[in-house]
Image (cartoon, rainbow, N blue to C red; front, side, top):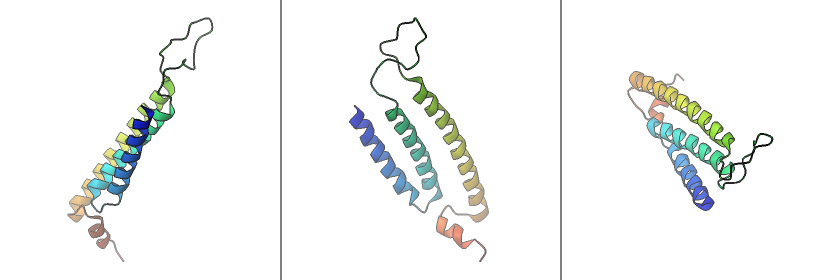
Length: 115
């Protein structure tokens, strides 16, 4: 099971790198979104995939046999919110650039820079 997650992680990083190298701004934003999801997957993989004893058990209580570690879940939830805000900002920024310059090509956007 862990091998499949690691394989998915590698494929997602490769696709995100390919999208980042594109000249189209929309593909760059999609690559940023995919890379943030890849970071979430890496946190999930590092947070134990098997069901061991949870790290926090009150004194005198019995540990749940199949308890999940809550820390990676909280980190992933926070990362999802941050990546959503970052992608929303990037979409609005590039939409404004598209309205002003009339293109989504990064090379054409460079030509609009003052020299």
